[in-house]
Each structure stands twice: as structure tokens, then as C-alpha cells.
Length: 252
Image 1: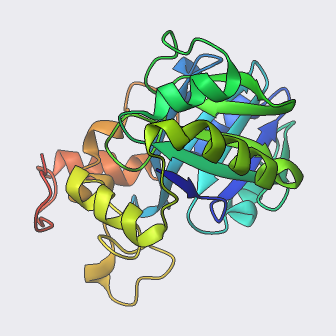
Image 2: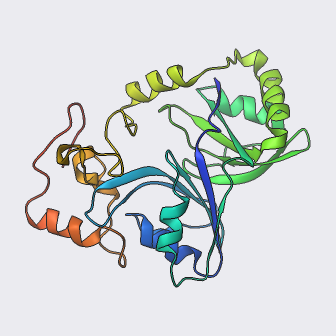
């Protein structure tokens, strides 16, 4: 299936202190993220409650791409105080297409003429399809084999048509967000404002969740330097962990 996931908010973080900013705002260790790799991570407020979740891709030694469900520019800018870093909102200029399913690699190889067997899960590389330069990450929100294609918004329709043409022999279908929602539910992947509430939007205390309470505790690294919410999360662990559970999610 081919899906348009361009509504994601997308930010390019670059500069000498880019890795310091990313490491400061996410719960995982950004210093271990190598060029060409992608990680999934939540990020928290000072109380250790989840604000949002998304992916972080390391584009080169001094630049990253961060995706989010909600607008995050102001939050990133506030945490960039004192750092030599540039934050660019590329949500409108960069489109994203998700090519997902067991035949997705074959479609992508037919469209590009490249062998993608070496592209590992949560890795990324540059690619060209019909003269369109794009960044390809082996990521997705379906639980199946899949790729996300990051491309200049002005070339997105041309890329869509090229993939549909290359995918005809493989039974490709255009799909929408409801189909994506079914797939992610079957895969057990959580969704903000559906399975948990952002701490920004919580109306009562019971709507506030730490990563441990929504099955993301394994994505919290205490072996790294300071990050937003660390003290609160350490205190939670010291108390014996979360007292609440979400139905259907495995919680430590």
C-alpha cells in the first residue's frame, strides 16, 4: 500500500550542537545514533510526562530530522537556549510517502533500479526515482515491512505516480489514514490522542502518562546525560515504577 503521511510535523535540527539539543529533549541516547540510522522515541516535560513521540533520523554528523504528531518548534527552540543550533520547520516543504507491505521492497527496487536488500530496519539512505532525489528510511507505522520516503513537496505527486506505476505488477493500492489506523492497532503501536494524551492537552491528572505507563519504558535511558524529565522519571523508578496500566499494553 502507498499512503500519504505528509501531515506529520517535520523539523531539521542542524549545527555544531545539534546532537546536544536532540539528546537534551528525547529520552533515548542521541549520542549513540549513527549517521544513516533512525530511532523511535518519546519526549517528556519536566514532570516526566509524555509530550509526544516520533522518529529521529541522523542525516549527517551535524543534522537530524525529527518527526512529531503535534507542533513542536517552540518547545525545541526553548530547549535550544545556549546552544549553537538551527531549527527549521520543514513540515510544508518536505512531503512523506509511506510504502508499506510485504512487496514494498520489490516495488521500491523496481521504481529505483537499486538493490535495497542491505537497508536494515530503522536505517536510511539517499535514493533517486525518475530523477527525483529522496531520502528513504526503512520505517513505518504498520508493523509490516515498509519504507518512508522523504521528498521535496513539489516533487511528491510525481513520486506518487512513479510508485503507483512500478507497483501495478505487485498489486499496489492507495490507502488512507483509517487503513493505517487498523494496521497500527493490529501491530500494537500506540497513537497520541487515541491511546494516550499529550501532557500539553491533559485536562486532569489521570490523563498524564510517563513513558513507563504507556509501554515505552524501554526507551528511557538513564545511562546518558541530563534530559528533560530525567529527575522525575528517576524518582518514579525509585518509588517502584508506575502504579497505573493502560488496557492492552504491556507495562514493566
